[in-house]
Image 1: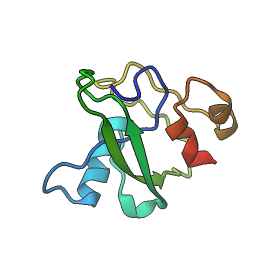
Image 2: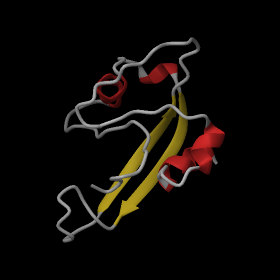
Image 3: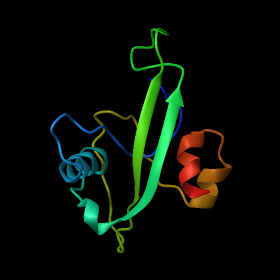
Length: 113
């Protein structure tokens, strides 16, 4: 897995024939346990992530992600209990803490620079 053993931002892929709005709602539900609408949050920009490895770890090809990054501000204190289907653990970090840690992936840090 390309970012295995690093803390990384919530996210996912867009399925064939799925609109960006549908994908955003599905991904926020899957990753955060909340179904959120894309139009309610700020668009940060387009980012590219390149990895030498891939989901099969076979070394035959790399991975290229095109990321449509959004800033999600809930505006109120809310307790999130995200599903742990894909991930072992979740952690919320203040930007200054996130930027100082070696176990946060550099691609995740890029959103805060």
